[in-house]
Image 1 (cartoon, rainbow, N blue to C red):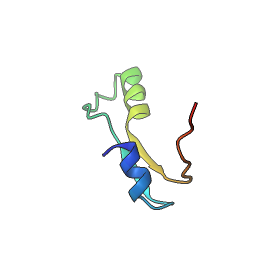
Image 2: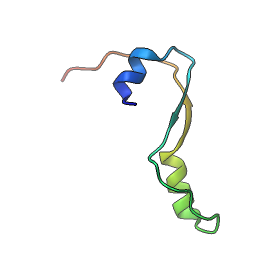
Image 3: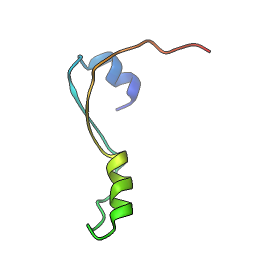
Image 4: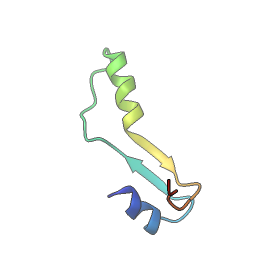
Length: 54
């Protein structure tokens, strides 16, 4: 699902799960694990703003 679709269909307060599709590395690879956790997770939609024109 694209970000545009999420903004138009999801309500405020909805939990949004985002992922890059990578597999979770073993726990001993702490740097790889930390990098993966930055790209995969769950967040709550708290604000909707129209796209800014530059």
